[in-house]
Picture 1 (spheres, rainbow, N blue to C red):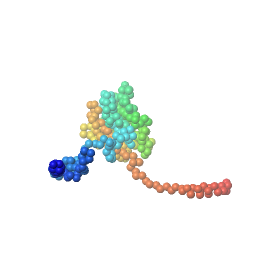
Picture 2 (picture 1 turned 180 degrees about the vertical axis):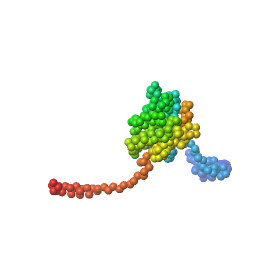
Picture 3 (picture 1 turned 120 degrees about the vertical axis):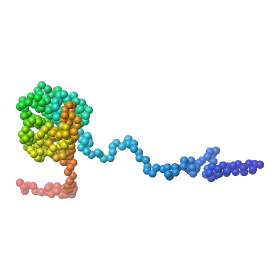
Length: 346
């Protein structure tokens, strides 16, 4: 009877293994517990999807890796170069316009200098037709972080209202400023400064800035001749300095009077005309962008972004081979000098 029960128990175990798909030798019993083999564990995995449901292309992770600080390489362009070094550009970033009365726009200009990078990071801001006179002190038009230099219209112009020039210099860019010329005549208003900023490329000694206003009723040829004479005198005084003349020229041009100068503004500044110009003796020095006018003025604000690259960055480095004395040659020279009878030379 016992033998029959043992045979039935063995048959039951064998049938259960066959029904589960396992072989009897795949598992063993130790100390009352089961020990699973590798084959048993692999059979527990879910079956792989059929080939038709698999994606042909691997999925791309569009999320930015937090550990990656920036993309490989850098974006080019004059604006990105200026953002990286706002206070150390090779040439000053300039904002200039015909404001048609500066005093009633000073609050807007305060807000621009606080919240707008174009104005706040500008090295130079030049405005013509400020309509200022001796009754308006500098404290009425001062801007935080800027030093103001102005030239109001005088009686020599033959007019009692309008006109006037003003140049703001960013204190983070330059504090060494010298006023050279202030002129007010019926044909031309002119203000000339020479600046020596904190950072300047080695090929330049100074930077000459000139703000002009040529009235619509002025003699354009006489105004061009006057500007030319002043600019030539500045070039003789600072032969290695960049010279820039900016302002409202109306019908006056310097293309013939100063053929070596280049004009950088090629966007409309008033309606569909380009009368607010900037001339300079550096080719391709600036890229001009037009911005909305200040207040109710009808002249666009022109932003000149430096496009000039320093000579040090444009010239490829040269390799120079320098011969050095070996230690044996140095010791031999020292011995020769020591045993020389120097009394013969006297």
